[in-house]
Amino acid sequence: MGEDSGYEEAYGGIIDVHAHVLPGVDDGAEDMDEAESLLLSAASQGIREVIATPHYSRRRGTDRARLQELAAQLQERMNRHDPQFRVYLGQETYYHEELPGRLKEGQALTMAGSRCVLVEFDPSVPYMTLSRGVRRLTEAGYVPVLAHMERYLCLREEDRIRETARYGCVMQMNYDSIRGHWFQPEVRWCRKQILDGRIQLLGTDMHRMDFRPPEIREAVRWLSKNLSRERFEDITYRNAERMIEGREISL
Ligand SMILES: [Fe+2]
Image 1 (cartoon, rainbow, N blue to C red):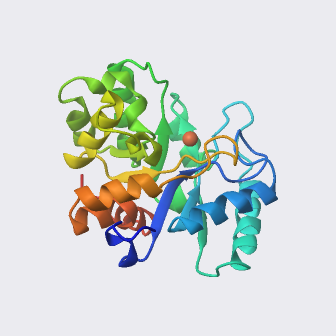
Image 2 (image 1 turned 90 degrees about the vertical axis):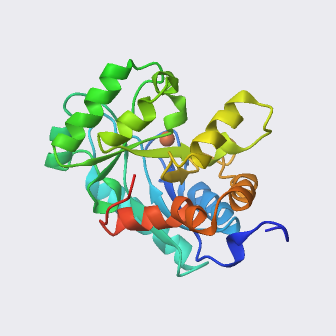
Image 3 (image 1 turned 135 degrees about the vertical axis):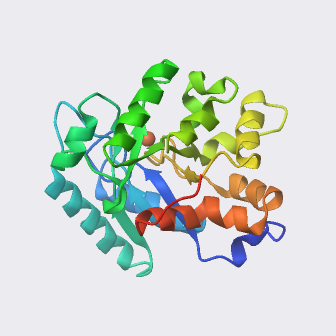
């Protein structure tokens, strides 16, 4: 990356925790070639590990063996380019009342086999519903990771992010949301959440080469200029590493 880009020379590489990269299973990559192109682009930007998070489909259920097989095939493709690159399997689960049960049955997947669950809600979800969903997951023994937390209007009100974190919820934001200019209110809000320490994980939410391809360079440059080395490492890969290894992420 650029000469003035900060810390990226010194750390081991970024872990992307949100990626629709498994081919043919949701609105992400169409085939294995596109999945490979997405990951090569990600790798060229400093990403060294990715948790593939296809959408959980309530209607179709989860063919766990098929997802594992696709992740293994993609890993094999990446081995030809960089044997260090890792592909893990997770899922982006849309919250519904049966979700804790589906997770227990292995019908919905946690992140890389950990207790963490990437969970999304409707952007206009009432706060009570979101908060109850988060608590039901923690009561069932999981650690909810709120996918692209910047989308939920109900969290814009004072103190709600902190309160949701108190219920044990980890916050994930998309790299895309911190790209842009400080005079854009949305970008400014997202950056403030990061500066105030409310975000623990970042993800690309990559889909296809022509629709939301991975693009993290500008965001990483901003992060490296505005965070301490320790916070930069936590948010770009150390917290993801803790999640994968089943260690606690401090909120
Ligand atoms: Fe997603």
